[in-house]
Image 1 (cartoon, rainbow, N blue to C red):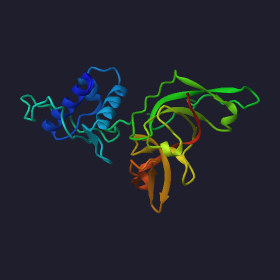
Image 2 (image 1 turned 180 degrees about the vertical axis):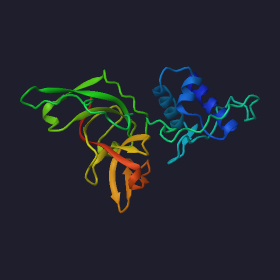
Image 3 (image 1 turned 30 degrees about the horizontal axis):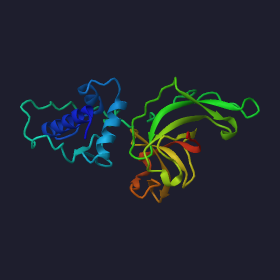
Image 4 (image 1 turned 45 degrees about the horizontal axis):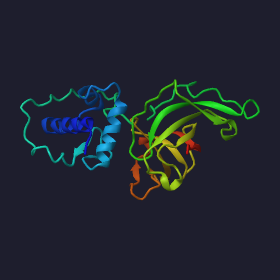
Length: 246
């Protein structure tokens, strides 16, 4: 059974697809459901995917597919008032918004680091929830923070992210965990990284370089490895630690 908002979003996407031939933007969905932020849209889409109503087609922006409608909805028919297609997006503004951190981190946003001799704990900015499954939108909240043992950090700048999803569970990273990331644009082959794809999507995966390609590997056999050209993926940081509440 779908919640009211899940049902509203599914029907809006279905109407938009039939009227225009492509899925609505996250901004359009946010406005249609009268939500204050896009994070709610991402949670609704994830829930609809898990229930088998929606499918996100890989490697394509704004590519949602309606797999089925609720049983109490009549067969599809043309809408009397189709949704007008939006004008083409400017190249500099990605049409698809990712599910957790923004692509770039401005200098100084990662907090002041302290050594273990200075204090037993360091307060790191908690930027939001990152998909350990499908990429999700970065919702950086500079006001949120988390206390981390200073001995865990070492040198460099760090930030924290809350994990959403189970695609890294076989690497011991579970839904709801808080991962500690050392900011940087390089990582060794096989490292678990925060990866920015096409300047739009951000996800937590294991990095594998295969010739001229870059593979982002999940640690869950239920998910597929995604392979990209080297110019499509940028490392945003490397996993160095994990916090878990019981």
